[in-house]
Image (cartoon, rainbow, N blue to C red; front, side):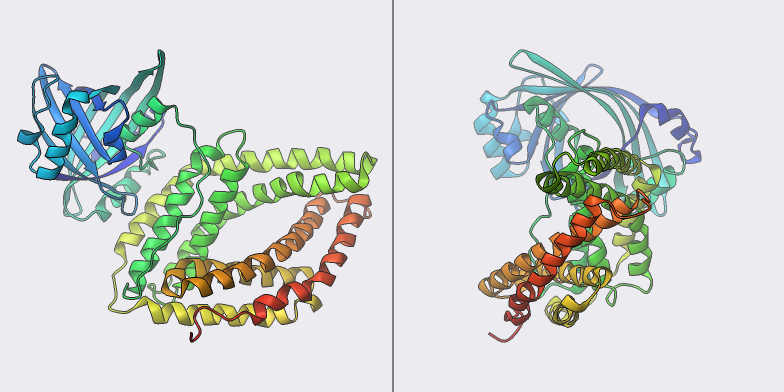
Length: 493
């Protein structure tokens, strides 16, 4: 058995000539033509267990391969792998797999295995010695093909695989960063097998929310930060494809949430991170956060504020003009967000950040005291602003709302460290207060968006927004009171 540690990078086929001009790929590569058939039971029992069974044909030789996937760490996939020559259609798992329980499990379903999909691709391979590491670089071009219910589907393959043969996993990202100077290389965590199954099942992308985090009180501060940062990058990347689709509002929202959580974590852990790390990476993610934020603001305005204006103003000429302006701005900001997510700089940001995460050195400390101090500090700052929120202007109230969001994200990160019932009770009070502050912020943002029209004087929609804000201001003290008085989960039980 071997362990496969690799980083997958997608690229455009039109960029291959430029990539091949990179000095690190100057040597003549080894060439292979690979035909692979992936097998599973009719009910896909193997993929549910994260097991892949493959027959690979290279010229006249056939290899049987079994892979089991481990959780991805920092964008790098790791798999246990067994491979040996075989006779096509003969699944001799006891001889191949030295993990007895797995071999037994596979043997029980061997007679049920049927072809699910195939991958046909040409491969160019280089073996590089890079920063005291040995890395196999494989450039693959071809097709994934499947047929289900008499419907055939195909998907192109165009990717660079960096497989670590010897050395530190961080060198995979370092090599990817250097190769990215030639072309856009984008980290792509999905294996060919995962894409083949998705094609077979005709799976559609869905917006991905932040995953729940499990933190143990004995975990170190750096290990918790790494867990949070990598989960944020995973959420961001899980929504990238959806941002390119026509119905992309929720994908943009969830990608923006991922970046807000990431930037909150960078500030939250700044004292534990190396000097300058927090500032550098918070600034690095700022531009894409801004582009997604602009698109999200126009989404909220068009889907939430415009319908409210419709109810009150109907076919007023000012509203008709505003609606046309808003739709045009919404499309423009969406196009900008799409362009940024497919840019070379965005991909390089992800590669460089993941490389930087691998460089962090762990410390002999405990997260519990760090978490409690952080929550106390964020709670104090929020309560100070909340007590005087009704006297503040729109910009200052926005800061109170941001403080509330940061407090809520921080509690999300650390909630498993505190009594569940107290966390749930406090979270509910935060959520209800955040809802009102969110409505107020949407109105304040609506005023800013409408001001982009540069009118000589306020029109009817702008006057409507200002009037509605007055009503919310009257509700604000009552909405803030519960969260100010709510017992905190990190206090003494």
